[in-house]
Structure formats: structure tokens, C-alpha cells
Image (cartoon, rainbow over all chains, first blue to last red; front, side, top):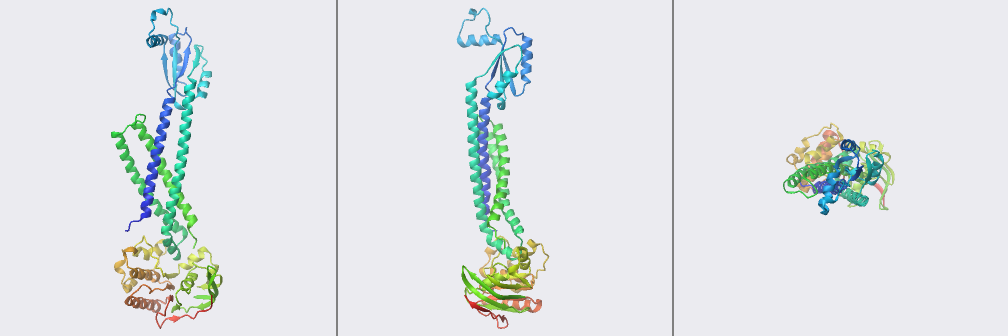
Length: 276
Length: 208
């Protein structure tokens, strides 16, 4: 059979849509994941009273670990705190008669909980009598929250614009596709064939290249996984993260791609097709 | 079977016919003879509902085509064989699929008279695509598609246009055979009279 260039064009548009959008969304998700990772490295400090017993500290650590949003808890006891300070500032340890440091906790949260509001609420909720004070690096948290919201905003804008452009591309190729077939469809109407039957024929013709595009994209994605797994590895994008974000975005874009094909086919047919 | 009563039709505000009236003779091969660009195709298109008259009546099988809605026009077309001037084979279907498209897509179990393949010598073309055929071969397939289901009325718009003399003879022989043996009525539009035995319709109209 003669090569049908419109079908070939639709096939490549589908493949390029799925791959481009998957890679771009994958990059944005990786950026988001990187910022979130940085965010969840910001601790909330809980300073305990100096007269607290070791058992009370351990009980308190276990209680904090159970609280909502807590990823990990690091106990810094007073002895360790003194050693760290002496080491850091090269101070003679004999000048201290008593250890001036209290026991303290560094509480790390999951990224969604690492924000000013949650930290403040957390501070108010800790009502244990052994707690002296609660603090966190407000400026650092504010800065990283601001960066995170900018990354999300920028990603959403770019993805919205790209999806809009891609949809226009789908509409354009469908218009070309329909114009290419209009003469044949009109002929079928002259033989009494229903418009709905012709629409099904058109839909079958447009969905088929998209389906082949999907198969081809699967092969390409697996090749990409293999290549990245063997030779790749960006410093802040582990192979596992790469595969997981690519898999998610790939599935989303396959569905969106089929949705765009279907929607643009329906729109183009309704706008261009004449009844008889 | 087909009757035009005082039909007026204009194209881009330029009248082609004013008060055109004629009637075809059932069970005969009728021919309309008109010069180039005088409205032959327009007459046929008005019969199968692809063009509407500005005024007047086009009666086909007791229906007034101008009154038919979308479903009515589709129904009417299912009883018409059409041989197009511009051939109009479906580009991505083989000859066989082109011939069977009507049954396949309308899900009707129509009788396909395969003797026509032999009469037009197109049996060897069945698995080919239109682009693989010469213009005269495409024209033969177009003719075959119009007559293959033994519809009661066949409309043919310059059917012999692209054919060599020997094929013209074959096609005329086929038309006569289908008319005599199967009582199919033909309405052929042509530049010149095709055969002296065909009934030439007397078109009555005022020139635009």
C-alpha cells in the first residue's frame, strides 16, 4: 500500500508529544523532588530542660517519632553537644566546671510538613514539661519555601503552555488529515453511508497511528531506561527516581496523547464535515 | 422515476437553468446531451441531493428531493448507482474494497453481480489500489461500482470520458445488457449522443 504521509506525521507527532512531555515533566518532578529533599533537611530543634533524666528523654524521643509528619528524630545529648563545640572551636574542655548544654532533639519532617505553619503548630502542640524551648531556622525555611513555590509555579506555567501548544499541533494535523480524506468521505456519503459511520472510519484512521506511536514510545522509553541505568546518573536524580518519575509521566502523557487525538478528531470532524 | 418540474438553479448568482422541466423514461437508457459547463453534473447532483434547486421540484422515486431531510437523502442514495465524472474511488481501499464498501459500511446484504468484472475485464485489478491503475482502468472500476448492485436507477456523468474506443463499446454493451436483462434505468449525461438507441431527453428550459 502507498505510504500515507498524514498518518506518518500523526505517528511522529504522537511519539514526540509523549516523549517531550514525559521528559520535561520528569525534569520538573526531579527538580521538585530535589527541592523537597533540601526542604526536609531543615530540622526543628527541641531543647530539653537540663535536669531531665535519661529515661524521660528516651520516652520523649519515642513520643515525637510517633507524631504526624515526623520523618526522623536525632537526639543530641548534652555530652555530645559539648564535645562538638569543643572540637569545632578548639576550646580547652577543662574550663567548663559544668556542662552548659541541655539535651536537644533535631526533628526532621517529610517535605509536605516542612513549612512555617506546621512548625509553629508543632511547637504549640508540644506541651511536655521537659521541653525548655523549640526553635527552627526561620530564614532558611522561608527561603527554601519560596524557591519551592517558584519551582512549582514555573513548572505549571511551562507545562500548561506546552500542553496548549501540543493541542494546537494535534488540531492542525487533524485538520490536514480530514482535508486529505474529505473527498473520499464525500464519496461515501453519495452512496448513502451515514455520517456517524464516516466519523468512526475517521476516528479509526486517526487513533491507529497514535496506537503505533504508543508502541514505539514504549520501546524508546525502555531504551532510555536501559541507557540511563547503564551510563546515566545525574547527581541529584537517582536511577530509581528517574525511572519512577518517567514511568508516571509517561503513563500520564500516553493518556493525554490519546485524549488529545480523540478530542481533536471530534472537534475537527464537527467543524469541517458537511452533513450531505 | 425522475422528473424535474420548473427547476431553477443558479451558481454564484449566475443562473444555469430557469424553469427546467423533463422526465426520464423508466426501464430505458436515457441520455442528457449538453455542451461543456452547461449543467449536466448539476442536474445529476440535484437528483442525488448533493445540490438543491433554488426553486421547483425534483422528483425521484415519488419523493421530492428538495423536501427530504438528511436521513431521507441518505435513504434515497441507497437506491441509486452513481458513476461519477471525476471517478471518486476511495484512495486507501483496494478495487475490491471500493466495490464492496457500500455493503460493508451500510451493513446491507446486497447482491454483487460479479459477471460485471468479466464484462469490463477488471477481474485482474481487484487487489490493486486506485493509484496503481491507469485513468481508464479507474474509470472502468468507477463504472463497475455504479452498476454492480443492480440498483433500479443508475446516474452516469460522462462515463465514457476516459475510455478508449474498444472500452467505450464494452461499456455501452454492458449498459444495454443491464437495461434489457435487469430492467435497470440509466440516466447518462454526455457531451454528445452516445448511442442512437438511447433515449435522448428533451430538456425544456430558459437559458440563464
